[in-house]
Length: 169
Image (cartoon, rainbow, N blue to C red):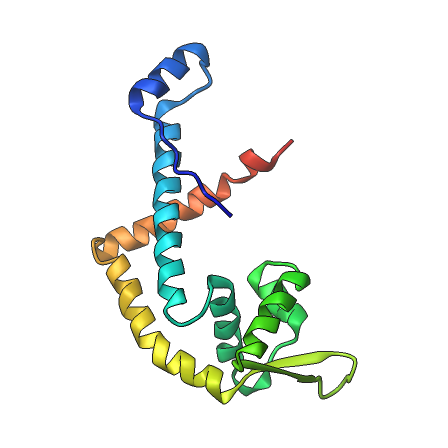
């Protein structure tokens, strides 16, 4: 997926606001700043995960399985927890299994179902990666105070609550 960085300055927004009175300059500027930051964070995460031969999706599944401990999860549970389709999870699991990081086995109570578990190699990768990952995450947020971090979480929840405005017909 190619993501284009928005290129709109204040003068452009002011000109557009004269043509479209519905345009709230502060809202658009805030949205564009959020989108630009999101692009930067996703780009940084892609580079970070690539160091370990992973994508964000693969990392998400590995962390789900890590938290499930030795119990494992079904592919459907993985999909539901990640908020993606079962087909997406199947593709990610195929790659993780090919890399020897997860294994799929028949479910103990129902052989028609599969249980997915981390392999020893998958556990070793996470044990090696997580200290670096957590240090880098801390570095990403290092310019914020503890109060600002809490405020940002609250503000992002408010932005998220507004997403239906973009989805409604």
